[in-house]
Image 1 (cartoon, rainbow, N blue to C red):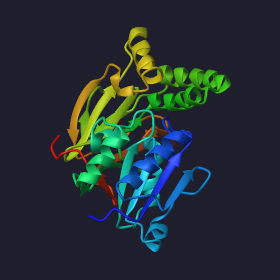
Image 2: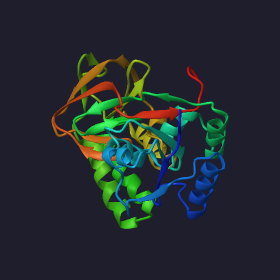
Image 3: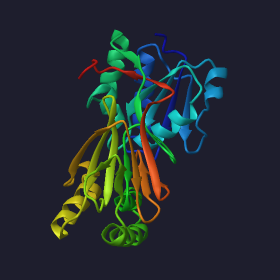
Image 4: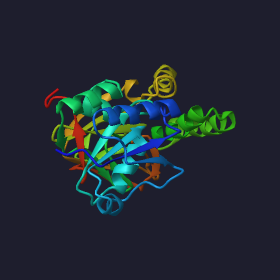
Length: 283
């Protein structure tokens, strides 16, 4: 598989995107014969479309950002027949871990140099508000994504305002139920985590029975920045699910907030642009 010409997308707001880190990434790619022909600094520059990439003859779009920007870049590239190289440039780097393991960028480029990589179709979750490559959080608990943005920016005013709103919505807002096929608690959950897994979707339900549960969930979200570590119910594996609520369902798609409707359908699909994986199949 030919990797060049290669374009590189970065985002200064992502966890690891210092100027020095970007220079190191560019040098690492150059050392294996894949020097970036163009470096795109999002959001100051627009993400390339599938037409842009096709017109320029790009074979690989390397994305050194967090999961949210990776999602945006991959969505923008729809219609292009190249492949996306995900590099760990954010806080959680969940997609990079899925494709390469929990390894630094230099290990990934080392695998590329050795020819130890493959092009794959990436499973994803389709929603009415976009497609998730990593996970969707649905329900009042998704409001905590707004708090996380304030924490990331160290905006004390935004943290105070969004914390108050997220606390109120999570404790008092209507839950979200898995209606078809019926699963989990009849009254629903404060949040459902829906992620592609194998040939289907894996669904976890999060609720807060008492203040101890709420504290554990808040710690997981705000300190560890990982909602998945909070207490939850394993609801199982599905091809697709329909969820309902008495109010519009808040969504967090790969870490980015969206607003859904009273009823939302989540389906497992294969994303329409390929990705490069260096982790052995089956790991």
